[in-house]
Amino acid sequence: MTVLDANDVRRIALSLPETVEKEAWSMPTFRVAGKMFVTVPDDQTSFAVRCPKYDRTELIASEPEKFWVPPHEASSAWVRVRLGALEDLAELYDILVDSWKQAAPERLLETFVAPGPDRGRKD
Image (cartoon, rainbow, N blue to C red):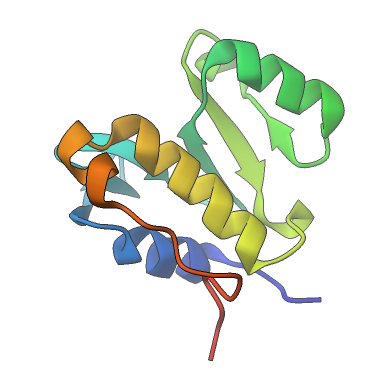
């Protein structure tokens, strides 16, 4: 089993079109067209991504060991993801791409093509 970490989050996030890393609230955040789509909190055992509230409730109910929301973020449209609970790099990639798509401008979405089945692979 691959052990995923904050460096995997950073590498995949920065591989997405027009993504930049910017420190905010003393943690790395990743943005596309100025909109944040992922943050990596201090302990780096989890990350937060955009997630509509109706999807978030279902995610947490179905996989509470993987997805959660701290009380202070309950009103936001974000969800936390535990790195240690993810199956592999492909799952991490899919979660990050989904969040990126929610923040990316239409012009990027029109041209974005996800890589094949080896997406996010470590060489």
